[in-house]
Amino acid sequence: MERQLLSGTYLEGCTAAPATARMANHGGAMCRVAVTSGQDVLAKAGAMVAYDGFLQYEPVSQSFRRTLGEWASGERSPLLRWFGDGTLYLADFGADVLNLQLDDESLSVNGSHLLALDASLGCTVEKVKGPALLAGTGLYNVTVSGSGWVSVTSRGVPVVLDCAEAETYVDPDALVAWTTGLEIRTRRTLKVGALIGRGSGEAVQLGFRGSGFVVVQPSEDTSGRLKIRG
Image (cartoon, rainbow, N blue to C red):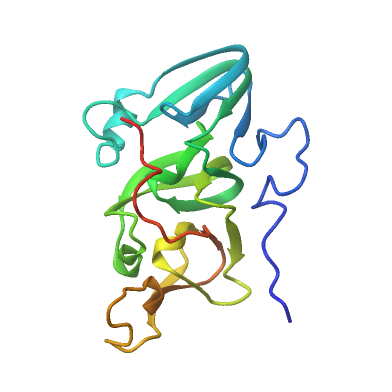
């Protein structure tokens, strides 16, 4: 039986979104955020490309900035808080955009892929442990938790795979984000020396199992084009 990809609650943007959606794709490489009073949004610094209505922004609070200390470089926070009433358009160097709606869930995502999130969501920087260290995302990931919207970027159109349906194996260099709480293990499929003269991330995969999903990009390029802007 052919495996089904996640849609609906988790994956927004592949089908037409209602005009009232909090976050929606505007084309493939832009996120449209409906901002209203009392519903602020946190967005990557430098990601705003346009907005309409009456919107303002400010750096995140000092306490929140300290929380992101391992993620940010220097004293400048990588996130800005946008507030007011209007529509905000975000992009990151033409990367594809995926909008996810969390329902009392937690998502671990590499900071370079995090574009925006509802300010009401919890956001902490946590050290990557265990097999997940092979993901090539660095020593720290951003954990977003609660109920609300989060927007991530991908190099190419991403796929969202349901790990509850079947154990899912991912090339570490193609991994964008995953639901926390999943059981993660490594799997080796090639003998040492089988690829003399050329490397391949496909020799080792990360296996995910449990109730949740993983976000995978169609690229293994880790040159760092999608980095936080300083």
